[in-house]
Structures are given as C-alpha cells and as structure tokens.
Image (cartoon, rainbow, N blue to C red; front, side):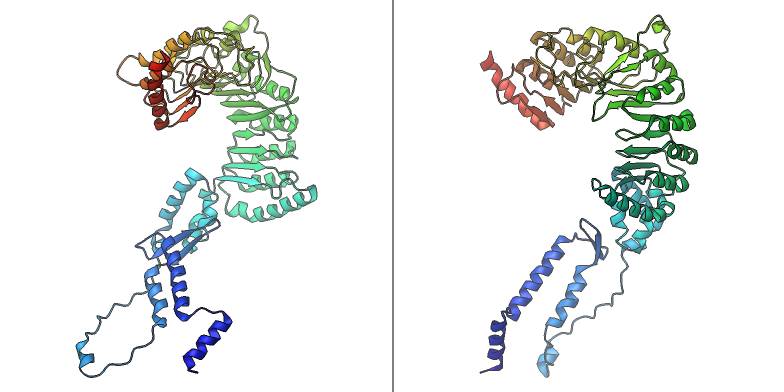
Length: 529
C-alpha cells in the first residue's frame, strides 16, 4: 500500500478530517472573528464583551504571517523560466505599532472618559476600560472620574452571617479603593447594607471630603454618631436621602443640627418619627432647603400627617420642590394668619399625587400656592376635590406640566365636572404635558377645552407633547382636531375612551403612530355621522 493511502487509512480510523478540510474549517473560523472586528486604520481593533475589552492587532499582517508557513517552499527554477519571471518588489519592513491608545496624551484620554462617565456613570465603563491597556488603566484610575458610586451589599437577601461576612470582605477592598480611587467622590449610594454601615461611612468620612449627596436605601444600623461624624468630616454634604431605611429620628435630628444650615435636599419615608423631623424643619433648622420629599413606605401608616402649611413656608422659604407622595396628610387650620403667610415664592414643583382619596381641596391648594408665580409642574393625581375653578385662580401663568388623572378611582366617585376650558385657556401657550385621565368632563366641555390648542395667538405651534385622555368622554372629532393642531405631540393615551371606535382605544407613542391614529379617525368620521 502506498504511503499516502496508509496515512488516509489511519486518519479515517482516528476520525480526523483531511488536511484540506482542517485548513478550510480553520480559515472559516478565523474569518468569522475578523468579520466581527470593526475596520480601523490605526493598526488595532477593539472587541467588546460583557466583561472586558480586548485589544487585538490588525488582522492583515497577522493573517499573512499565519498562512505563510502552510505553503510548501517551491523549488528553485533555473534557466530561461527563472529569468522570465519578474521578482517581487521588496516591501519595507514594518516596525511594531503601539496604536492610538498609547500615542494619545493622557489628559485627552481622561477628557474622553469624562464625557462617557457624565452620560452613563463610572461603572461599568471604567472597570472595563482599565483592562484594555496600560495607558487606559492610568486614565481610568484618575480619581476625578470616580465622582459617583453605588455600592450594593454582596449576597443581599442571604442569611445574616453570610451577608455580614460578605460585607466585611467588601469593606476590606474599599480600604484601599477609598484613598486611591474615591478621594474626589461626590455622590454615594448604599443599598441593602445591614451590618457594616458604620465602618463604611467612617471610611468615607476619612477619605471623601468632597461628598455632597448620601443615599441610604434599605440600610440598617445607622446611628446618630455615624451621621454626625459624616456631617463634620464632609463640609460640602448638603443632600440626604434615607427613604426606605431604618434610621432613628434622633440620628436625623443630630445630623440636621450639624449640617442643617447648608442642607439643600432631603428625602424621607413617612413613619411615626416623621413628626419630630418636620418639627425641626418648622423651627428653621434648614433655611436653605430647596427639595423636600416625604413618601409613604411599604407598610403604609394609617395615621395622617398633620402639616402646618404656613409654618413650613416660614421655616423653608427657599423651597423649590415639595413632594408628598401617596401620603395621607392633613393641613392644620390656617386661622387668621393665612393672609400673612410668606408662601413659597421660589416653588417650581408641587406633587401631591396619591392612589387613594385625600383631603386636598381648593382652599388647601390656595394656601400652598398663593405666592408661587414660578410654578412649572403641578401633580394632583388622585386629588378628586380639586376643581378647574380652583386651579384657574392660581397665580402661576406659565405652567408646563399639569397632572389631574384619577387612577384607581371607582366610577361612583367620579362626578360629572365642567370647566376644563378654564385650564387650557390659561395654560395652552405653555403646557407640555396634560393628564386628564379618569376625569368626568362631558363631551362638549372637552371639545371646548382641547380647541384652545388650535387658537393660540401668533404663528407658533402649541408646545404640547404629551396628552393623557384615558377613560374620558372625548370624541373622535375632538381627538383629530388636537392632533392636527399639535404637530409636536409624541404621546397620546386613548385607552378606555367610550366614545371612540374600536381598535383605536390605546396608547400611542411617537409621531408616526399618532399620525396613523389621525388617519383612522378621519376615515371613521363620515360613517360615525
């Protein structure tokens, strides 16, 4: 048997494909990887995965080097055939190319990373970029880029001993990271930390003097000494978010005594201890406070919060955002001091949204906003006692967002209302978002209200871009008119609108979907008449 036949027989016995098949499969796999790489003229290509970035050399010369050994050397030609064949021109030798990642100045690379961090945050980009090359590692290690940090406790939800051991192990790593990476940290968020909150915040107080915001979400073990220590070590700390965390009122009061004069933002979860904190705010412990948010916790407290409106206006005169979310609260009687209250002259956002009936009325709303001409956002979802006449009397003239939807209300609680034209006639020139979901305005009333968007003086179009009419008695002609008058409309909710034809009662997002709805409404108008 010939030697070639013997080799082929042995290969068939081992199950090995022929040499030509092996070479073909190797080339196809290699070509698949090269096709995944983006074309580049720099000599290096980036391949991104879920965990890291790989820097691979340019595929051209590498493929040539790999394929060269596969070809058998040709025999030397002699005679006239060797003289007739021209010799290939010599190619200049190419030295090793370090790529643009090594040639770009470090300062420029840090600025590029800063743009990405500003839009998407430090993680996971900086962690992946640090694995690319030495220069990228130097750029990603600059403390100026690590200005925002979110630490989720490892093994959250595990048994107490395992979770405490994992938190302690992570704390050991942070002992090196804090002085070397997070020395310019500004915003810190801790989530699900149970046992090592005090050592971690102590570490922050020692190495992060530029901290401005601290957020504790579902954290335990926060003592008064912890927050006071942090307030003294971080003179720029002006924002505190302790929603859904177990923090005693004494710890918050001690913190406000130290950092109250510079506090700008405060987020709280309503509990039996909230009254003491609100009392401190009424006593002008935070005269520079701009944002105050109190929301209901997971276990809702049935005891209503009594909030003296006029005292809050005196204690926090610089307030710009006031949110009482899903909260049952009662304002104390105003008495004779209602005309002498300073109001909130700088208030821009008021949110009293609730999923259940509350006690907010026109009189309470007037007490809150009687001196707020700069109001831009008014969220009164669930406030069934508010009427258009009460809103028309407000001093704000350029309201941009108005939310009056009634969600989760029974049909027996939704009374027939009138006066919706008062809202659009006053704010049609400035409204960008309007929510009338569940309101019981009659068909003619809604037609007059939405017709105001087509009668704006001047040649400019209405700025309305979001309209929620879910569950209202709006008619097809009214909807088609408002779509034609508002070319910038990007969201339209027509769910459960009983007067509209079937197939069109849904939410539309995007200009194309809204234009399709307009076409369907225009074709259905003759048949409906």
